[in-house]
Length: 404
Image (cartoon, rainbow, N blue to C red; front, side):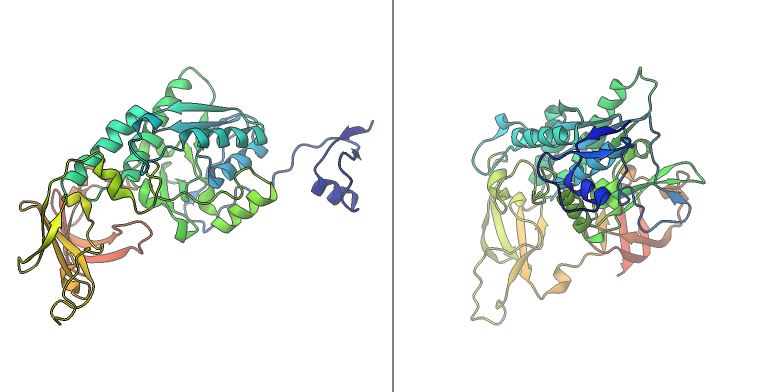
């Protein structure tokens, strides 16, 4: 017996070998076959010996962390085409109530609307969860405290560790505590989580598409949560993800990549945003010889490497050129500026780190098991090409690079 089914234009053409049917035209087939998963889905790029990408079982629960962006939308598309128990979850981590002026923004409500549109399009349910309190106490307030001390923190790292893969995992564990079904959290991050066939553990790796790699921001994730997380997007390039979104006409297909922090709307306005939360602590802007050239409103107002904002006397060869912030003297509350071509003013031979928060791919490894002197791969900022630091030494907090 023939069954009638309304199919997409592209599929009708493939089956019938004819021109596109008119709107509403019916396509006839002998049976309605099970959905065919796009061959591009669930690829594994740059395989690593001894590691593999884990795939859920057909009956597993798949929870997609939806951000309203194209990457998480494509991740949701992939799993919704292959698995039946798929749903989205949207995290609201910032509240409109916290907006002080036009420099801050809260797109959480508009993002939620777009997530719902995407989930309706994919025919999967979606839930909104609020982690505003956790974000404020574990990410935002510590960020302000670090800025006040003259440091330049990266709140995205804290957000991933404490909220997106901290509180979220607690939420899911509580929800599935009494369930016999296995569950997975899927995200749209450009990174890879692979299973080690020898040890049975899961480890995080850089993305196949290096210019979008987000593993730097995810490196602080506890090892215990990795076995429950899937990051399929890390095996693709951004153009490939855009192409898939266009072909499936996803709601988010043309949405630009997110820029900056979730609570600051205007690029370049972060300093003004901090002004609303941090009490001014004026101090001097000086050169290395101690000469005062201006005033700052707080050590948090400048980052090492940025332009000084001081008009130096360009007629004097000693001061001619571009001047940048090269250091901070916390005790004297001073910003120190140096000429851009004074490379020694910007180079550092030591870096202070918290060794207690490091996670090792080999669970038997620790700082105490390493040689006193050795070589390490060092990446101090996102998308930086890792450098091999030779003859390194480490104590409880300091990693010293004896030679660069």
